[in-house]
Every structure is written in structure tokens, then in C-alpha cells.
Image (cartoon, rainbow, N blue to C red; front, side, top):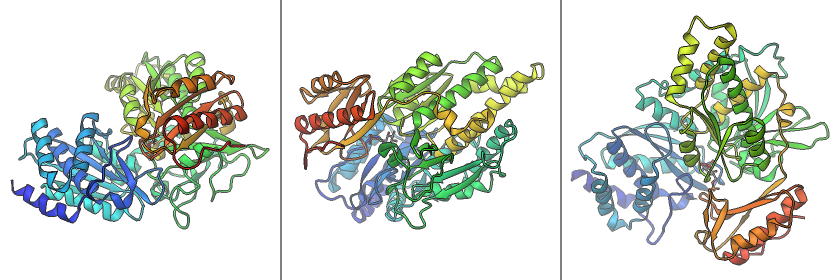
Length: 545
Ligand code: G16
């Protein structure tokens, strides 16, 4: 095949360092950017095969999201804008790790296994974040796409969710929206403006939001979006990339894990603030109270706010649709308790990784999914969308039902249903707060989080940790779960689990308990158990206090 000659020729320009092995993890490949050129080229090749197989446009995003600036990564986007199908993740790993001379046979293996028609046209959309390495790495992706004869469209600098959105728009022939950045802003902002039209007497103060852009792409794209907002929202952007380093002491991951205000932002009591992560697919909110005490409103609080709003609208509209919230083991125990026992909504727990939450959410009419780290969105089934649409057009219903149906319709349009999206989530949250006339303090008081702590432990090979029960229990190494169980018993309202990260070379430890001191002590003791039983490297974890 002539194309394979081109692949062989081009692959020499993107050589794989012999012996280097990387894994398609929680959200694609992530590593120091110097190791990734061959991976990018090969993911370009894989995207062409996936496009031929699905007869659809496939997306490739070059980003390492919350990871430090030196890292980079790549994720593939499937036809409806969702994450790459799990069965293809193993092809990605196989292709990435094939030695130089094995590359063509690895491609042939995928073609044969999947029965791919080589003559089928292929189309790939490519996007990148603001990392300095992203320009050359996205060029390597394009080289891979072209080497295998695929067509490409390079969107350049976009947020990850914007690229997911473009892929979905393209493959639905524009039904989901225009596959342009401008089209994205127009759809979301129009829906936002319609929604906030239901808010009465919003003062300029209430419309004001401070945004930490993590010194990344989210800040650039938010600036572009603001002009479409019709003054419905007033935004001050901090950490816009003009001086600080990407994700360094700022951004959603920093704020969530450190439970403190990012650097580069001035938070006055009463200010409503939020942080995006490096590729703007996560968002968390926070504020300082009159005593300057920091309060975090993470993905769990966001899920609660959104699901409460939707449930109320469904009741007002008289629609009998099943709503559920999907979380992971990181969800604060208080949030799960509130959702199940006060709000009476179904709650599901899945493994970490939006791909898992997304699939679970698809099982319901309205599936709200959020990871505690702020990554999430809402999915409406086709049947639910149809019912809402019909009701919104029904001239026989009373004003209250009509208003609720129209608000549900706008909510669907403001949401990016393809994946968690900081810009879209921000608009929805701001609209809900405005409509409910709710301050960030009132939102925070819906329930009180159990104090919690997240830590990381370095081990020589994190794959020695295997988990079950949606990552809530460790099955290996031997004795680890027993050690965790014994530690948890010594604290009140306590829970803890460990899991290998799929984006960083660490084991993550989560603990919650009745007081911050207890949560910190438990997290430290569990970290020590991991260090001792799972091959810790470097210094032993030290107590936090
Ligand atoms: C990615 C995934 C998230 C996941 C996070 C951390 O986020 O998309 O679903 O929660 O990594 O994963 P892990 O704990 O396995 O490292 P992002 O924002 O970095 O793309």
C-alpha cells in the first residue's frame, strides 16, 4: 500500500526511543513532552483508522490538562464528541509502544481486527492547548494524519471541550451546532442570555465573577466569549497567561487539592470566584467569608446545584423524567448523603475518568455527572430532549409549565453535552445562581462537606495497586486494604481509599473524617501504608502537621 510507504518514510522523522513504553491512561497519554513526538505521530495514524472504521470525523486534542507545563499529552475524541471507545485504548497503547520496525505490522493488525476498509475517506479535527510544546506536537499529529492519507482540520488553540463540541457538530451535520469556535460561543451565550432573562433584579455586583484561567487556554477563550455575553455576566480574568506559568499554584486542580485560593488572584470577602484547569474542562468555585476563611464549592457542590435546579424545573414542567447523579469515590460523603437522602435522587458511583461517568449518565433521562475535581456535565436522553421540546411548543399548557419547559430548553443549549466544559458549566452555574437569586454563601450552605485530604505517594511501579468496587477497595498489594480498614476504624465518620493515577506517576490517597485534623492524620497514615506495602520511593511521607 502506497500510504504505508509514506508512513514508513515519515515515521523516521518521528522516531520512537527504543524501549520507551507508555500507556493510554485516564485521559489519553501523558508524559514529559520530550517523550511524546512519536506518540503524537502515531495517534494521528490511529485517528485515521478510527475515522475509517466509524465513517466519521475523529478529534485529537494535544494537551496535558492539569499537569505541569513540562508535560504534554494527547486524547482522542470519538464521533459524538465522547472519549475514545475503551476497546481502542488498547490499540493506542499497542501502536504507541511498537518499536520502529514493528509499526506497519501493528497498523495492519488493527486494520484486520477491525475489518477496516482502507479506501474509506478519513477526517480528523486537531486542537491544542497553550503549552510551548503543543505547537510541534500537534504538527506531529498532523504529519501522522496526512501520512495515512487522512484529511485534517487544524483548529489551533482551543479548549478540550471546544474540540469535542466541533467533532459532535460535524458528525451530526450541524444539528448540534456550527463546527466553529464562533458557533460555539453563539449557541452557549444565546442560551445563557435566554436563561438569565428569568432572573429578576440582578445587580451588577451579583453579576460579577472572578475567574482564574490557570494561565492556560481557558483564559484566552473566555476573553473571546465575553463579547457574546451581552453584559449578562461581568468577568474579571486572573492568571490569563500574560505572566504566570500554566497550572503553577493556580487552576482548578491546585485549588481543589490544596483547598486554598490560587496565587495571582485577589479574593475579597463576598467575591464569587472560580478556577479552570489547563485545558478548561474542569471548574471549581470558591469564596472567602467575612473572616477570610476559604470555602470551596467543588464538583460535588456543582452537581447538587445543577441537579436541584433541574429537578425543580422537571416538577414545574410536569415531566416525569428520571434524573440521576453520577459520582466517583472522591465524592464527599456529605454530598452523596444529601443527594440520596434529602434530594431523593439516584446516585451512581463509577471509576475515576469522565469516560466512565459519561457512560453511566447515559442510562438516565437526565444524567448529571461530576467528579469532585470539577469535571462534569449533564446528559439528556433523546427521548427527554424530545419531550422538553414538544412541551415548550405546546400552546395549551399554563404559564408556569411553559416557563419551566423553555428554561429546560435553554439549559440543554447552554450545556456542552459532549464532555465536562468549564466555560459551559460556568454559564449554567451563573444562570442558576441569578435565577434563584442565590449567593455563593447560600449555595455553600446546602450541605457541609466532611473535612477531607488528598495526598500523592511515589512508588516504583504504581501498577502494583489494583482496585475494585469503583476504586473504593484495593485488591493488591496484599495487606494494603486490611491496613486501610484498620486505620479507618480509629476515626469517626471516616473513609479512605487509594488508587494509581492515570495521568501522573503517583498513587493517589483520599481520606475524609469528622475533623480536618483527623482527615489529615488518616491520609498520612494511609500514605505510609502505601509507601511501605506498595514499594514507596524517596522519603517516607511526613505528617501534615
Ligand atoms: C483527567 C480525567 C479526569 C480525572 C483526572 C485525574 O482530567 O479526564 O476524569 O479525574 O484526569 O485522573 P487521575 O486521578 O487518574 O490522574 P484532566 O483534567 O487532567 O484531563
